[in-house]
Length: 144
Image 1 (tube, rainbow, N blue to C red):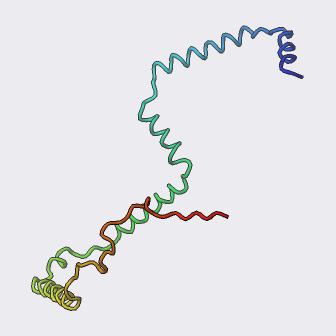
Image 2 (tube, rainbow, N blue to C red; image 1 turned 120 degrees about the horizontal axis):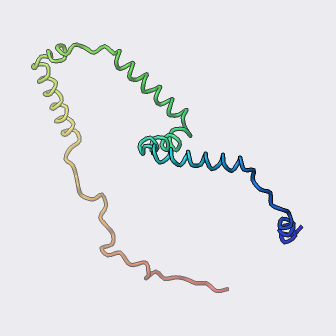
Image 3 (cartoon, rainbow, N blue to C red; image 1 turned 180 degrees about the vertical axis):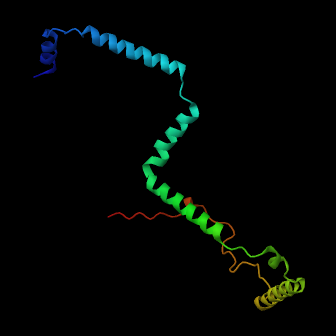
């Protein structure tokens, strides 16, 4: 059956009228929805949050919930860790701290002495002073 035959068959069929009750119910529902949409517009922030939820979080919700669970576990472990008294950390004698600094400076000096002076000259001098352009290459063409 070709498209023309199908269209001709449709044209021959009589159109039925929509029942009057249906028409009134459809129009009344459409008018109620239109008036409620005008009176209570959807907040932009709520709409943005719903779009974000659908696009970002919902497709990989298991990964996001796993990340949230890990953050909660880390937060709980961090909250329950015993922190040493601040007074113990600040009571460290200044003499011991100055000895550590002096020891680190001695280590640095020994390292400098062992490594010797730093030579900044290039390892190998350049062979050409001016590189030739690629267009000066000789192209060999062999004929059979």
